[in-house]
Image (tube, rainbow, N blue to C red; front, side):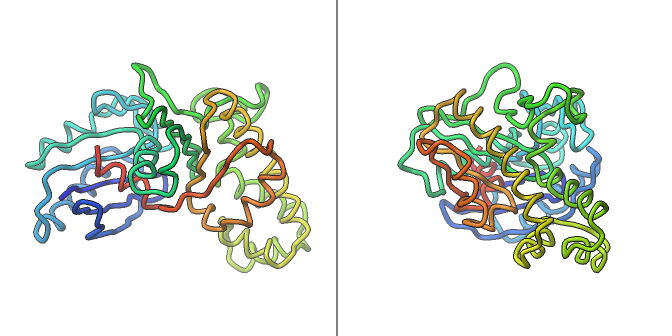
Length: 291
């Protein structure tokens, strides 16, 4: 059996798989500290190993990973953190660490709904934007960071990104960006349905945003249309660079399915095939388990 870990900016997801069968799943909040992350993974591993005969561990994490070292995970505040060795010192099984979007792409390739495609780009929409690239059914990996499509620059004078550059795609097309723009719209439109939901809950999230959208809030519709414009710009760039058979969108927001795909497809050339992940939030942890 294999133990897969998917570290995100908000949650850490765990899975135990036996062949193609999921035996166990869990999710906890992410504490943005390297030692805390290691401790939480070990705690979960120690819990599940009592019931399952786990033979190896795979971990996906957002950012640049080489030889098990997390060189840069901006959204987690990690630099040159030896995650694989930190874990391996405390468990009795092999440990491999890779970029989270690469893991999710591997999960989609092995377990997902695009098995007819030799070339695929997975775009993960979450705290940031990640990318996993499958070329000829293999993960594209180089000696430098690869697949960091969230840092494609779409506006050189644009919003400041945690990576140090300005105008990165994830500053406009991530869920963090959507929520930030929704909050700004609330402040500018205090009488809107969107703002009413914001005041009622005392916060904004992707789920609450779509509640306003489903209620036909004009302000939410405008925010969403602008968000899809930014999403489409990045997708066009990805398509031009990699020429994949399909681009798969993943992340919590994609559970909205056709609410996203229908208007997004209208903003894209017809020859760009775009799908929503069939695995949803399981893709990263399943792919990590297969490292």
